Length: 250
Image (cartoon, rainbow, N blue to C red; front, side):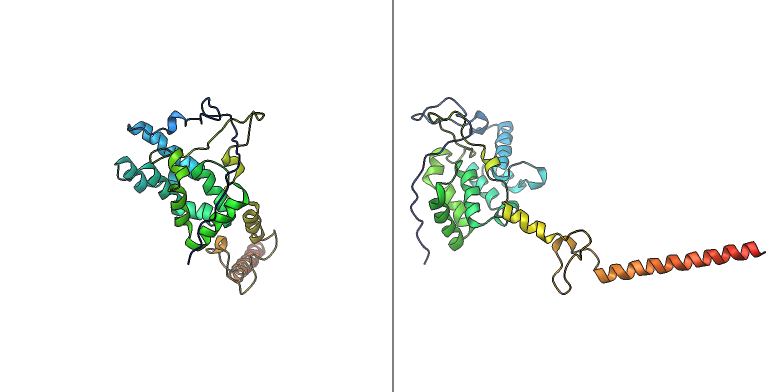
């Protein structure tokens, strides 16, 4: 039996800039015009690129999802469905989901989908339990189906970093992309330890070979090849000396 989602108490937050448009505490800022729902193809292209940047940090051609784009352009799905497809894509699973702990994954998705930082450890723990019990799809559906998401972005709006004006704080925090890189220091350090130091053996005998050396010859084959090359070079050198000596003797 799955545990119910824990209650989370909202906390006061601030963003990097005062607002995308002039606003007050009573009047929240509106999204940029480039993010507003539109009908023409050119503006839809802008929205699609913005969605990629919001979820992936970039809009590289190799990371695009042509099937999802086609469905969005033809009206089969809406922007909220497009965002869901990006969050459940192989690209996101490979470059974000597998690189982070559940706690850090909560920070990544709340920032990208809801446009705000998490409400402290209480929210991290609540969503982490959901991920552990039901997996990534359930977490994505819970965020996209939440009242907070629907109230701020609805079905057609691309998520963005929300902003508010707080008295006594003119600047606020950095953009989310700078606050939460794709992976943390633990993932970076783990991969750094897997790379052998200069002059050391690439791997311990009897252990599985690293992925980055999967198509490379084994150390035994390399030594055999180098020995064969050295022996061949020595034989050719001796043959050359004998030939030169024979020519000089005549």
